[in-house]
Length: 275
Ligand SMILES: Nc1ncnc2c1ncn2[C@@H]1O[C@H](COP(=O)(O)OP(=O)(O)OP(=O)(O)O)[C@@H](O)[C@H]1O
Image 1: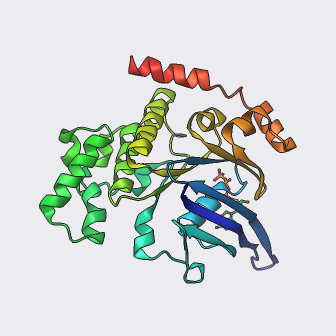
Image 2: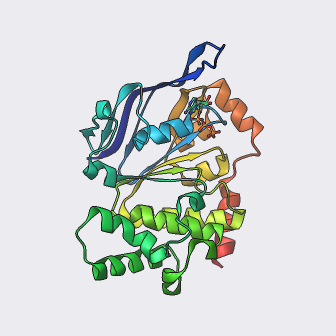
Image 3: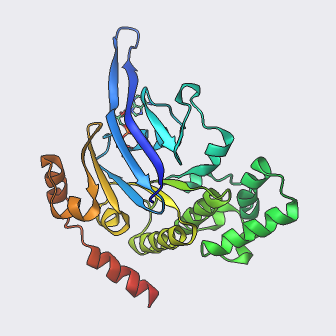
């Protein structure tokens, strides 16, 4: 039987905007009743143009932000939205990766400490155990033992994103929310990081919610695709169904406006890199 790692039912998020000295505040409905679910080991891609509500949804799934209405279930357990926070157990299950990892890395913290910190805060593991686990994870994401005592500024963008991924995995999460994780990287580095994410997904049976505006990346990584437009999910289905037979006019326009999403070209890029 398939297991739903994440289920979102009818998520709504309102923001109050405006309301300066003379202005009237008004309600902006950024997410308008969106429902979806993701099975264990699968990837749901959320696509749409800037401002359609993708990041708002990402923050809600990770309960950085609370929805105005709706229900969230993580591994079948209902999240207590009224308290606007996850239980510590749930917090460990859901991790988020942002487009720019540099902003979340402490410039004065060595990478070994960056990776050990989640264990220090959330577990009773000894310093030696934390060090071993951090070193293992460093190697797992394709970095080297010599990187353990280096500082964030000594790494490239792609390496920093590997560090962010390693840190997110330290507490064995089941769900990773990836908000434009490769958008800031060069094309060849994008391919390497996407490859790494695919390998880690297989190895750890990870479930991904992958937010992106790049249809070629989505076509490569997604099992299912949800297209958002002004806060609504206008299309939701398997990757092949959405790409081969888009139903909604907005999806058709989005696909037409984007250089043809081409899985063959990204695979060729990956193969070239591997050779
Ligand atoms: N904290 C906030 N206060 C007020 N309005 C907000 C807030 N956060 C987001 N919004 C508004 O909600 C809508 C959805 O924003 P969101 O950032 O989720 O979109 P997005 O699709 O992720 O766009 P981008 O790719 O540019 O980040 C936008 O109209 C945005 O201006």
